[in-house]
Length: 120
Image (cartoon, rainbow, N blue to C red):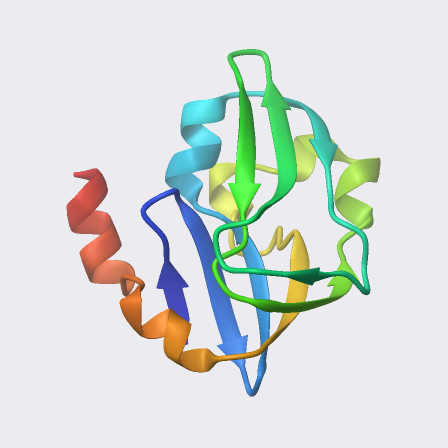
């Protein structure tokens, strides 16, 4: 189940664990990514918490957790090759995985059609 926030994060829930990243639109708006700060695995976060930072040649952007839960895994491979973070690969470039406390929080988020309508 792929869902989007108004802040351009996405979460793809599989069971009670979701992979989290930023949308192709957000990557396109940022431009060339020069620095990424990811959260620590094992930490608990609440929905809306700032958990990561993306810096580009244009701006720095906080990345917010789309759900409450425990961060179970972080995609350290992204840090080795920031050039792999492209709009075309946005859904492959997950930032972290979270064990979601309350899947009901995702009901407030947009599906892909609603997100595309928002950014149109």
